[in-house]
Image (cartoon, rainbow, N blue to C red; front, side):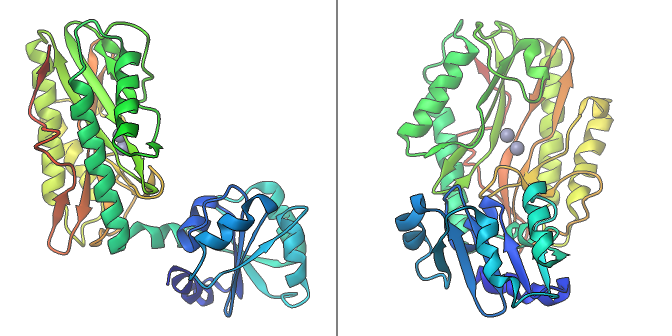
Amino acid sequence: VRIAKLREQLGAIGADAAIVTTLINVQYLTGFTGSSALLWIDHKSARLFTDGRYTIQAKQQTAGKGVAVQIVKGGALKALEKFKEKYQGKRVAIENQRIGFALATGIKKLFKIAKLDNAIERLRMVKDAGEIAAIRASVELNAKTLAQALKSYKPGMSETALAARIDYEQRLLGASGTAFDTIVASGAHSALPHAQPRNVAINANGYLLIDMGATHTDYKSDLTRTFGVGRPSRRAKDIYDAVLEAQLAAIDAIKPGVEAQKLHEITSKTLRKYKLHKLFTHSTGHGLGLEIHEAPRLGTGDATVLEAGMAITIEPGVYVEGFGGVRIEDTVLVTATGVEVLTPLTIAPKHWTIVG
Ligand code: ZN
Ligand code: ZN
């Protein structure tokens, strides 16, 4: 079905065939998860080229998808030579946004090139029922992981120890891995949106920011919670409340037909009320699925219109150098009538919470 949808677009792109080499897109279209793959799609057939290591795996994973598997020696370009004669003078579309230079150069020598642009990424934005179930399960597992890991929190614990606890509990609950390197950042360090955990005690009075995700049955989840530690200042809570208000305002506005950038406008406008908008230095969120960051991007300039079936994150943040940062993030689903917050809020509540 997914290959058929891409095939339908070939005409509009002005191509007679497409070559897909981005592994995650090959996985989306065929189910194959190996590290070496080139997928050829024309109007009649689809053929996956990989190497000998994946002989069994490729056959198993693509069963029933209408894809022929062929093992090639000597690289992907060699595989394409068989199409050279038949497709001479015709246009073959490549993933011009993601393909490597060497491969693109090689393909250009064989065919006339057309551009897929983000055709596959656009297909991936709207999730089917199976994908939604997988994302839902991943989000639930991730929230349970946080609750479980926080039980072992002790004052004086290091950021790395808490991050290790999260990764461990996540695997115990059945995740195949983390969706990205777990972020645990306390005190002034939490003002770095992509902080790495340090081998130092969690700062005694201030913020504790945890941003974590699971990979579960191939699908990602993404969750950020910021806690107060010990006796945080009044200002710490005030900033938290403003970020929460911004997050809730954006979630409230989600429904089919709304532009992605509109949600960023809403979070920014809310933070402006508290003169915190200049300290909000990233976009409001992103799509997620097989990858942790997918289209759309909930930021200025992305006019993607939200549709039912899109899974996105809502994660405004405020970062004060030398003081600390707050980010609150949930994974949500756009539904036919509005929005469903996938994060189970009874397991991962959002109200201002102090850990010991
Ligand atoms: Zn996150
Ligand atoms: Zn995120």
